Amino acid sequence: MENEPNIIHQPVTLEALQDAGYNERPEDIRVKAPYRKHVFWLPRRENAQAFVVRIQALITVIGECNFGTDCGMGGKLFVGNLLANAAGYFQIDKPYDLLMPRLQCGSNAKTYDLLLRDNQLAYSSRYPIVIHAHEDIDIHYTVEAIPEETGD
Image (cartoon, rainbow, N blue to C red; front, side, top):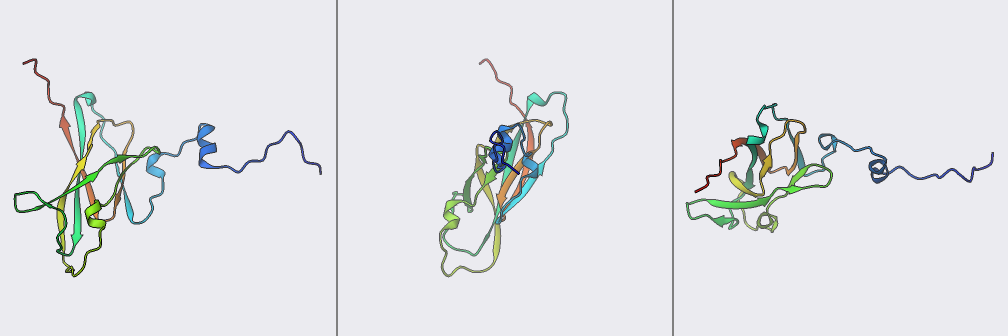
């Protein structure tokens, strides 16, 4: 059997599939450890453009060391980022100050609010909100009306 000179043999990659018009849906993309996938399908609304979705997070921290920033109200303040990924999902990593080694920490776990930057998304029931968050981070959302602008 002869090889045909006109046939191009090329390994199929995700990039090649995307170039051909195939896209994997964000909710079907596999999540890698130590992350967990959170998928939120929003109900259909007639006036969806009048609402926004605010992503909120809690983080569980094991041990009591000098981490985080004292927010002045007797608690710790942790700040994270809700990062958009080109594949169509969002990712939340563990805050940098929790990645540093902690020596002589206890083993009791406590849960704190995790303040997310850029956590406001447009309301849409056509596509799910897909978030890959570190396993120590729990995600929830609230739906809020867009504040009306006043001409004052």
